[in-house]
Image (cartoon, rainbow, N blue to C red; front, top):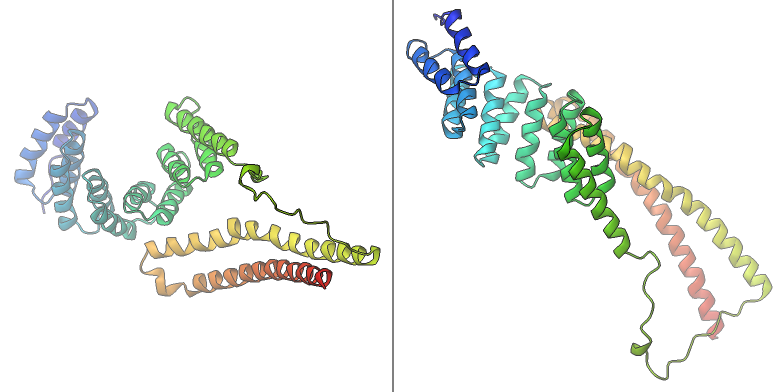
Length: 314
């Protein structure tokens, strides 16, 4: 199959650099008449159409490119990006997964996949996609901002602010990152002010007029010492296990879920890596054990207090 003259392609690329997009598109269309199966020409035409804000035309060009050259990763990835722009997010996700099968370390593919999944309300998967884009290309500011926006929308403001700060490390003058950071901090501050960890006082006007106040529990010195030791022993064990739960959730469980989600993106790995599922099940079992330990301690303490109340009434 013959290829277009290199000088003609260089001329088109020069026009694109000089932002003469209409001239570049006209030149590409003329070249494609003689070389309709040229992957390079089709990719350039799709990009120019996208820059000219002709997303439907760009979609058709990139779709043709994937037919002419199915192994061309950028064709699938660019098709997904354009499909996102015109709101066809399900098709975009499918195209982007095809692109990732050809190029597993393409940050733009993961970024665009995150956009598609966010619009499809697949929040967890979108977070994974944006995180993969950042892992591969830490300087991708848009990925930091998109990930932070998802965290803000789910009220995970500490994580959101971390993302916005990471974007500012890449570009300290980024106004969008600064604005998003300040908005997140304001919402978090307002939430803290509206929430009281000490509960609410009783409205005296709503109390029955003849309500009798409950008297303090009557315990002998020996019973009080026994109860104090029991509470100290139980809370010591419960505190240690309870501290382990957030650590488990943010590290081992989150890491295991992240590995599973990445494997799902690559269908060929679903059967080839059964250890990922085993690791997840083991992590969940360990988390369940911590939770059971805390619940058991609470139940034991409640049983003791209820039994003490019953003895007093007798």
